[in-house]
Length: 223
Ligand SMILES: [Cu+2]
Image (spheres, rainbow, N blue to C red):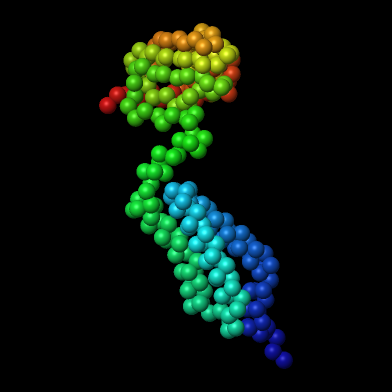
């Protein structure tokens, strides 16, 4: 008799053995990638467009599943490809809408500050020697300060809280090297802190009374 295993059997075993692991793993990866991709698109279009897009996607998924379930003949790679196109065309529409701005992205940008971002101001593009920061509800109103390097700085610190705060600068978050330690600022008071010139680089600032109130001060050469 012939001892060599039937090549088709070997092939079958090789394919079948890992399937109970491979199929769920691939499914998780694919579902995760699709969910992540779609969420990027939905978050980038105005909310009314996102709702419509999500509904179209949902109908598509239902339709595609019905199609697979009812199809009598085995699926060929061609029908899989068709299915893929049907499932992904809303994603493509979404990408086109996002990229072209047809969907009114300005409106979305205007709405963005309502989504829990009012605590964080955008960092100013130009470094300045006159910085401002305010303490509100045990948080700084910004976590990024952009200062001019090699120039004396002032930091106007406003305390809008009923508790005292101070403003201190350290070389880094190890707090090993102090660069400036501010006096405590009374509730509802403000203080103009004068800081010696800082070399270009990144520094760490915090309230020493509440170290969770911290951020990064970046010193940059002014252009
Ligand atoms: Cu504080």
